Amino acid sequence: MSTLAAAAAATNVAAAGAARTRGWRRYRARTFYLFASPWIAGFVLLTLTPVVYALIVSFTNYDGASAKWRFIGIRNYVELFTASPAVWESMMRTVAYTAVVVPLSVAGGLFLALLVNERIRARGVVRAIFFVPSVVPIVATAIMWRLIFSKDAGLLNGIVQVFGGQKVTWLADPYVIYALIVMSLWGLGGGMIISLAALQDVPQELTEAARLDGAGRLRVLRSVVVPLISPVLYFQVITGIIATLQMLVQPMLLAESSGKLSSAMVPESTTLFMVHVYNEFFYNNRFGYGSAMLWVFFVVILLFTVIMQRVSRRVVFYQNDVEDREDEK
Amino acid sequence: MTHLAESPMGTATTPPTTTLALRAPAPKARRRTSSSPGDRPSVGIYIMIVIAIAIFGIPFIWIVLTALATPQQLNDGVSGLLDLSSPVWSNFIDAVTKVDYLSYGANSLFLSIMTAVLTTFSSATVGFAFARLRAPGKNALFLLVVSTMMIPAMATLIPTYVLFARLGLVGTYWPWVLWGLAGAPFFIFLFRQFFSAVPRELEDAAIMDGAGWIRSYFLVFLPLARPALLTVFLLSFTGAWGDYLAPALLLNMDNTTLAVATTSMYADPRGNPLVPLQSAGAIIYMLPVIIVFLFGQRYFMSSAMGSSVKG
Image 1 (cartoon, rainbow over the protein chains, first blue to last red):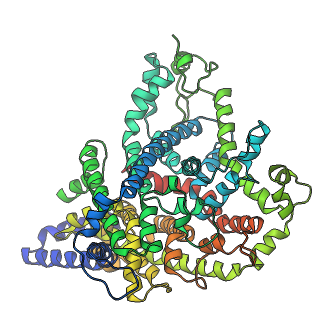
Image 2: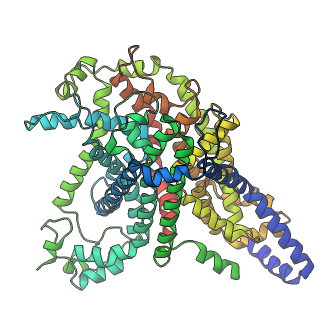
Image 3: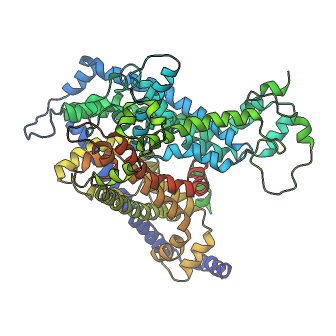
């Protein structure tokens, strides 16, 4: 039935007059905007407006509550760039943390993917064990790792004591940053799944040919497999960097406290940039200053994204190519 | 120098690969996923897998031990927790009765289902438009969709909170309604790919049978998209279920979700945390998500995670 109708469609379209085609096009365009309107409205109201609002607030001394606020020009930005080493410390801390966590989690995810791509027993179960931590809600993840790192009842200190060491207060400076890194890496199963999907698309002929030529496993991995799956690894690096730069909840939940959202109790070594922003907003009630910090952050992310897009154009394949081909029909 | 020493797994038990590769290819047409058809994984690989399983599994074991402990066992530290002689199963009952767990659970459930339904339907509709319709400005808009995937969501949440506070929306579920209605860029992207793959003949047939775009969307495309719809529904459901920051910022203590309640409600009148009860509560809280992903693992892997990045 569909072939018949398609044939009829082809004839009809060919026979249709120019005026009708124009009307058809207009109808189609109207439908497009009707269908896309939820997202367009959402973008304007829920993304653009808050961001622009933050820009306006960043030039004021608004404290979030009082009606008496006034424009203070660029004073927030001046303070941020010149008078506040804490801003740069938290920024650098975030960059360093990202530089450690993202490569480790992408490489670790690839390593696990290679392991579970082998024809091992109970492969499905093993994959699930590696994958599940990445979907556990962050609240439960933080509770679990606080139990592991807890000073008195924690597993880690239990092990330390078995080897004759003293109990360590893991969830305070300077060790808490390691706890945060471990907790983040625990979720690398998400990357594993993505890498695994890519690995399964690597043509076996290629790896076999390389092996015939005498390449060892490591060599096949380095020279054949990794280049072939590089777009997927690259994707993970980009999304990983963006996610890690804006990390906020994890340090707050890992800090030992049971109250509601007490970012002020986050130890210094895990006060990442967004935690600092959060402090300025909700602890110091400096909405103007916090907004200025957010805007600097937006610009940094934007610059980063633009640079990465430039770099990635050769590596990453977006669907646009397919669409262009389709449009030519 | 042999390939044995170069094995990434660092073991010397792999058989010589050349002979294996020279062996006739496997008779099965199905493509194997292993690196080499005849290779059996070596002992070294199993050792590494066991170590990794231990690392990834220990937090789960530890939280279960804690959830079954008495306060005394918790005070005794590791030796107390490893003493399995008297597991306190009633901790799980206390965890749901000592705090208003069911009511928070109902809040979580309502909020997650509502968000997921709205997000799924809205993202599908927008994704369909980008996949199947043409209009001036469409490519620019799609670039915007892709770019918003890069915008730090966490960072926009704080100004959104400030704005919603001024609009009087804090303490209500309206923000979730709005977020749901707007759809999510990543899901729009997924649906766009899904709908792009539908053969053009089907669309032409529907149109020529007299259906407009709207009818062919509802009667032809949407029913076809059932697997994608289910995937996105479950992903956005678990996303909303696990979200902590938005409910913490935007809701009050009486209408907040399990995520916030589990973090902050388990304390005795003097404010000391009730760790075993909190652990039990956290286990119950995370179980739905784990179950969903365990049953859908293969499915998610092929339909969502894989296709979204492989392009």
